[in-house]
Image (cartoon, rainbow, N blue to C red; front, side, top):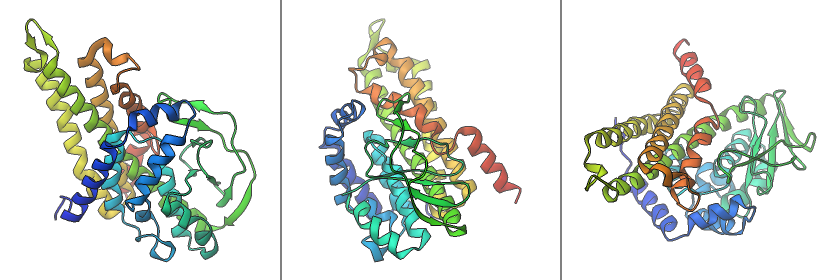
Length: 327
């Protein structure tokens, strides 16, 4: 079995990498955290132009079909660049609407999401009550444990997380009832799995960005007249961080191929822990300068912990892995 991206998938990743490298993503992240969504939305439109969000919608509604592996490849790049906004939630909402099979709802919402003209955030059963970036998203979807899909009219006061660019809010009760029944419950379950998978991909990208910046810093910072990167203890710490990320990567590809809930949970658990370990390594080796907001490193440091718990905490992912093994 091949666990390496195809040439086409690698080209897609390079396209996204080049686009993001040419954009001032750190400035967009800082603006997003301050409540200015204009730079982030401009970046969002450019990403949509690559076909990124089309990978989460069916061909009948301007998508390219549900392509989890290609989407995971793309979301690694989004994590590496630190792209702000409810990118995972928009893709998950597109999956939800596609899986639901309601032609009227799909025609109403999917074309805008695919084209990057609109964005979405959502809450799903078992994933926590808070919606990410409800103030910035065009649509706020909620699915209740009873299987009611609603378009919420708004959300309550924003709450900041560890990452200032990840703002959470409780959706208002009620709103327009879009659909209800077992089909909604099944579609929401699929959407939650995709959200967990794409968050795992983001975690790997965040971890790789942190490691790359830490390696460069270790080459430049000196102690006792030598770069700290030459010290054996530092080498071991960096090597352990790299191993954690490299171990998570094939689990992500396997999960994207199978879409088995237990494999997705294993990928999310491993990728989240690897990203968090990369953040701890970066903070330790950078020292006090790692705490400063002016250093771009802080943008990724602050993402690692929230992403580790988003769409499945380590405890929830372990439970899902165990549940899959006892079936």
